[in-house]
Image 1 (cartoon, rainbow, N blue to C red):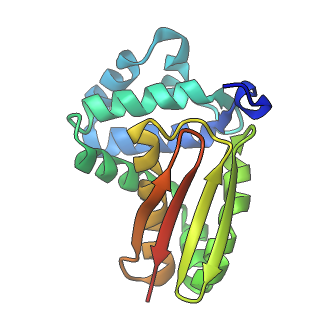
Image 2 (spheres, rainbow, N blue to C red):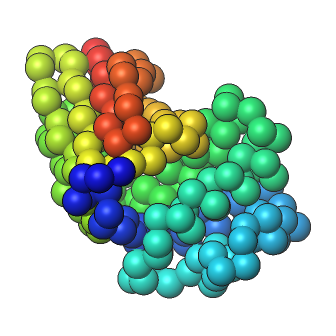
Length: 190
């Protein structure tokens, strides 16, 4: 990793952890949430045990939270992990955003993604959207975490529920390609 951007640290907003914590507790119970927290390295446990919405947490805290959730809540499977991530996303979309997504056109909802990314992430990573009629490509770049399957599932687990709310149907969202620090997701919708 010689590029300057790969030397910069990435951070995620505490709101992500609050939402994940709420989902885990409601859907899986307090004991499962405690098991997720205890499965994380001690230095990152505070991100899941007592997150603050406005706090910025190191990306490694999220990576460890995803691994712990995969082991504890998803039984180590991709399919169940995707269910956990989609459930967390739906939990995190409050009433305002749910209404806003339903009344906004799908194109507007897609074009809001880069601003949403910047709201919950800090660091060198970028997100851009290319909308073409009834399809779109979401380009993630300068974000060196996509070799981790949990991050690829996080993309699907975020975009699929957002598109379902925005379109009212199950839009097709697939990973078109990825490398260590980039990922392209293809979306098609009615």
